[in-house]
Length: 537
Image (cartoon, rainbow, N blue to C red; front, side, top):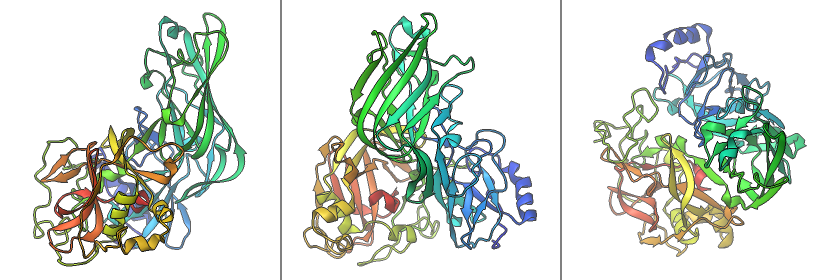
């Protein structure tokens, strides 16, 4: 691959290979470099289940910082409507072995690192999210040749940094047909809108700080979205608002009108202080009958932040299943969402094209070395080692949570464990963070001496007042023999450490509702999850 001229990856999700021929010619003749979104999470409008799958929309562009540290804006924009992937072409200078920061700063953005979370947002039709790119949606990614199913281009996926509130108000009884939702106002005790600076760490307020956002919902007739009856129904009136992440106390005001009675009414929910994470969607309660729509006057109800339905998006982890210390993932080149996917996403379904030997699949095969050593491949070298895994299990206060929703493989699951962050564990145990790598809490170095460690997790989510000390690991299941095993029920996460006594095994963290363990006797040929470092720290 040349330094500045890269042949674009034709398409991953759902695009025909033959459609790329002209794009390849254009890129080569113009001296532009192609950057391709490689994962179904890398999109800028949301799927209509409110769970966090995104799509690129018309006029979307990206920014990339090239090898000279100059920001380059894509010379082309998304055309042709909603799409799951797009070939963005950029000027600038890039090395084949390099990795480059990618920013999405909103539709029609003129800056590589400035994002505006709008105080006035408008969603014209129910259950659409094309307005998010104009309302404050933004994201950061790292592009590298190794992130694609071919070495002919740079691939990336976005980590979204703003927070999305999801609304679907309803009222029981025949009166629902007479009511329309005209707008939703969200008021905060602190800043939720304004001008922000985007970085890999997230959003930092710059200026124009605002504490109130209004989402208008006119519909085609300018009368407002209909209210659904008896239950939440996103298809009827799903509405989406972008806010800044952070710890907020919110008031959510549903503005409704009854044209037949010439009546306007506000129903308000106050949500006690709660931490809203970037890149996460929160479904706000909206039973307006219970909240006073059928009573006289305006009505205010109070709920705890724990009553919000929080949906984590782990779509980017669907291509993070690896044999231990393998160079490429278990289904490399044929991941879920690609044009030629081998990866089963239903339990009990097998694909025989999983790696079977070092000779046949060297890049997907596990490290067969013996003795005391740490992983050699870059992705594995960043993982917690065996000692750190024990700290998580024994001092991380594991909580099994069967209520928190998370997305993967285009579906919504429940089931996962909350663990204290390693930095919190170090502080609470009067240890330096780096020292946790050297020995476990018993003073044993697990890298050369094995001992069993496991606990029964506490049932339920940690207290809201303590939740910021924890992180959530989903039960993503694992692959063995080409089959996906028990997503939503178990999870297995590789460490960076080999088991010292047998070249077949390596340490991993196993999670379920019954046990959270550090295992050593799991075979390196299993397809366990390789979590990005940010998930653990």
